[in-house]
Amino acid sequence: MLPTIAPDTTAADARALLESHGWSLVGTGDWAWVLASPDGTLAARVTPFDPAFRLFADAFAARPHSFVVRIDDVVPLRHRGYVVVMERLHPADRDRALRLVRSLGVTSATDAPPPDDVPADLADHPDVVDLRRRVEDLLADGARRYRLWGGADIRPGNILQTGDGRLRLTDPVFVHGPTVVESIRDARAERLADFSRADLEDFLRIPAFDPGPGTDALRAALADLVLPEDQRPESCRPTS
Picture 1 (cartoon, rainbow, N blue to C red):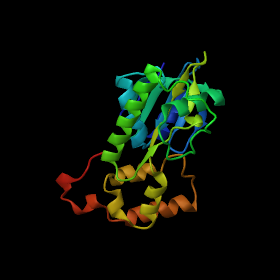
Picture 2: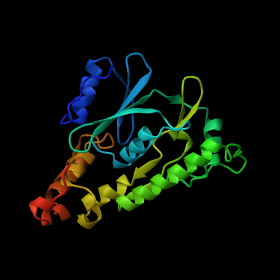
Picture 3: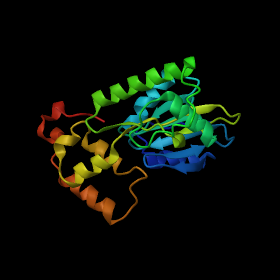
Picture 4: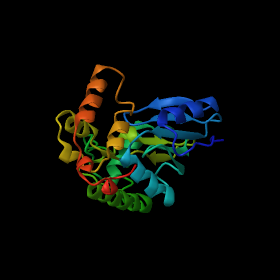
């Protein structure tokens, strides 16, 4: 059902290829586009660059979890872009989503905690206890890897559900994109040492950056920026 996608395909070309095979765009976030399969059972999340979701996808593709979106495949694209093929999900009942967020008890960097009157009635559920531990491990891994790690993004909007109503956590962690933007704009190259120039060029191709003068100015600032990789011998520079 998924067309063959070569590893040097750009995210834009991957979207076009999927659409030519009957996949349809059903959502656009800051970092990725989501397309649904022709039969509506699968989703493909396409991004030119999103290191946080890649950490999440790799961790849970290898070891699935009953409260996490089922990930069927991670297909590499050009540089560090990729397509994640996963089960198709739908908006969840907000009250049930709030209860799961409250039960997980992981402090989100992006949203206020659920109100105190929301019951944490799943807090002791064995699968929720296990998920809490695994999310904490994922947060620690991201913090070790990235200076501009954002932390947890566990909120009702990132809780979806299957067609038969089973809750699924999606997209629970993030790299702090606004600080990446500020660092490019303000020539703070030392803060960008975890990323190659190709990474940052692809970052400026995610959906958050509409075509126009603002994005053009950021691309020009990046072109003028001397990154840590530019000061290393060529043999020691990061590859994408």
